[in-house]
Length: 220
Image 1 (cartoon, rainbow, N blue to C red):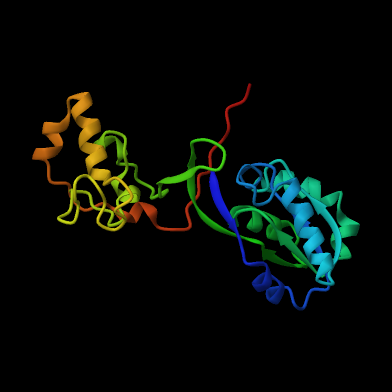
Image 2 (image 1 turned 60 degrees about the vertical axis):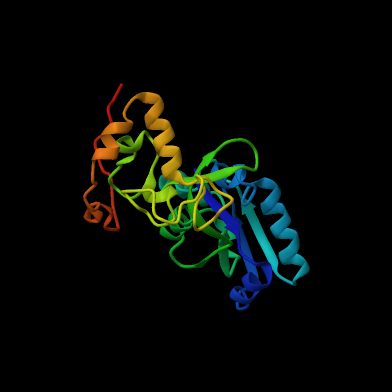
């Protein structure tokens, strides 16, 4: 799941200063779960923009905004409302925003949200960053816990000298991820291996952007 946070509304109004009329695109997937771009939030944004003197020509909340061909089909049905707008405001992640921009080539497209991280969900309202989408997964070498993301210093060998009683030097309210790694490896009987190993620097060439994944889907 891609985590997003709403931009400050006053700053957003400044960004939209030249747009008198706006069409709003939400997202029925991640942004709905995170309550940043679902039906409720889109309607709330519509009301706030109208109170600020803007005209909202229409709204849509696709099931998944980052699916380009599906968005193309849906926005085709909104042609008149989109043509009447000076700009589009997208309440989805950066991938969703770029999907809309790919389709609507003659309008400015603005982001209502900041895209923050790939999120693991525990329960409603609790989302945590456990993966950096770095291109080469090494979490299996650490008991299924990623030090690249969950250690603020990204250390592949640890703990650092600042760890104190199992807590993180950077944020003492959080467990040191290396304490979690050692606890996990002790349970599965692999602690001795990591204690004896010195990890080599990570190969960040695999995270060079932009990346793509293109294949021929299986049929049937």
